[in-house]
Image (cartoon, rainbow, N blue to C red; front, top):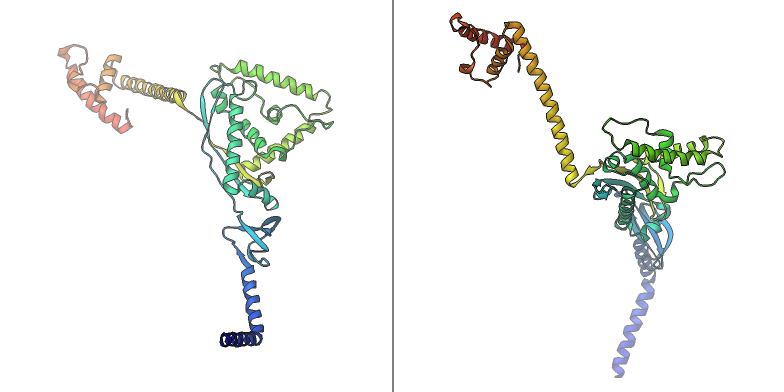
Amino acid sequence: MKILYWLLTVVLWILVMWSIKFLPIAMIALAGGMILQAIRRIPADPPSIAAITFLGKRTGKIKKEGLRFFFLYPIIYGYIEINVSKKNPDFKPQTVMTPDNVQIKIPVSLTYTPDRDNINNYIDSGKEFGVEDILEDIVSQKLREWAIATEEGPQTWEEAMAAKEEAMWLLSKAILGEELPTILKLEGTPSKLPSIYWYQYFYAQPKQRRNEKDEDWDRRKIAWDGWVAVIEEELENQPSADFIKVQIEARKNEISSIRRGNGSKPIKHLGIILNRLNLGEFERTGEVAKAAELKVKEELEKAAEEVETAHVIKQINKIKQETGLSTDEAVKLFQSERNKLKRKEFIISGSAGNGAANQAAVMGAVLSETLKEKGGDE
């Protein structure tokens, strides 16, 4: 046992002496390893930032792309890497129901960027997938409420198809919330009217019946007159409507910027900046869509038939003028030239002994060549 004890003592003494001799090298190696471990590269492609953590908790501070130093990483300081490139989700078309029980599909697309100043809210919202789920829920709910409302919004599917601007205003307000300021009257009290009605009052009042078949004009006019009465009531104590009009003009410009993709409005509770919001072409679905397509087809066929009829009449009159034939004879000749009547069936009335049939045959051949040279019925 004593021999083993002395052997262990000697080994420990050798190790201590060795470590003292090489201690500076060991310390340098340890420090170098810690420094290398603390240097992290934040990607520039795609554009990214690092949300800094201290002892595992977010600090609310960020570091930008490039080589960044995190002391005693990952024990003391760490980070959450966030891709801050623009996101372009295309939501599935929203199917809504109008008060006349017709379904309409509304395509919605938008562009947003994670907000570096509110990155904690972006993380809390579930980052890219969580934020997009929330936005889609907001869009879906607002469009459904707008389409089915009986007191405001479209009352028929025809009105809904023409109400993209109204839907855009309401959807922008639903998504941006308080970032689009409330329309205020001169005394500072908020207007009780939605901003879209102020917009229509100043810029897009319905002025006349669209056409004689516009059966809903009277109802729409009565509804609009009701809104105008409310607007004028709110303007009674205002020295001028310009104070409100300036706010509506500013709102209109903001929504136009968002539509073009130049928006910069933050949505703080989601931690993003809304750059673009667009509504695609509204589409009818179900039986109404089939009926509308059939109606368009019938109208096109009717128009084609009218053009064809006018063309035939013109050509028959031309034949009559150039040949002196009667109307019935000109019709038969025209049909024969278009292969709708066999040549042997083409008999011009008159005396059989005066060679009328032979003259007609010759005339038909000459006329055929004449029509071809002049562009004829084809």
